[in-house]
Image (cartoon, rainbow, N blue to C red; front, side, top):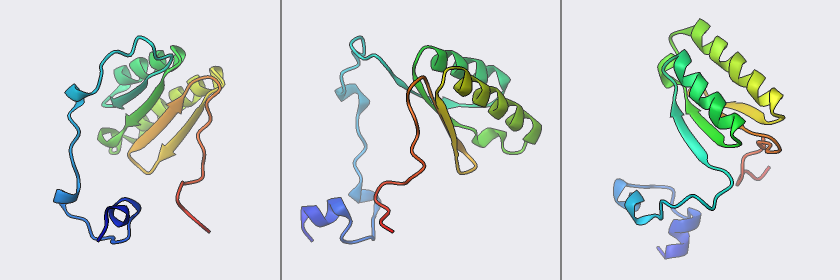
Length: 120
């Protein structure tokens, strides 16, 4: 199997050896020139929603893992409502990906509801 087959998925069977973990120390940590950042958040409670809202108001994108909240339905709904309101306030966007992730964007950034690589 050639390298292109591996890249574009000619063979769908994968093993752990097919993946390489990237060392973040090799990536330049200087983000001073960037006008926006993408934050990864793990939401465990209401306090985490405050940090997410601040990042959105600052113009950053947040990918939030809400896995730990699945059993607390009222808490999840309250946090989702708060984040939806923030996205509306800044004219951003918000989507829920499955049961465990949310993506929230700031002003002027829309999240496509179409998956890439899906030919219909």
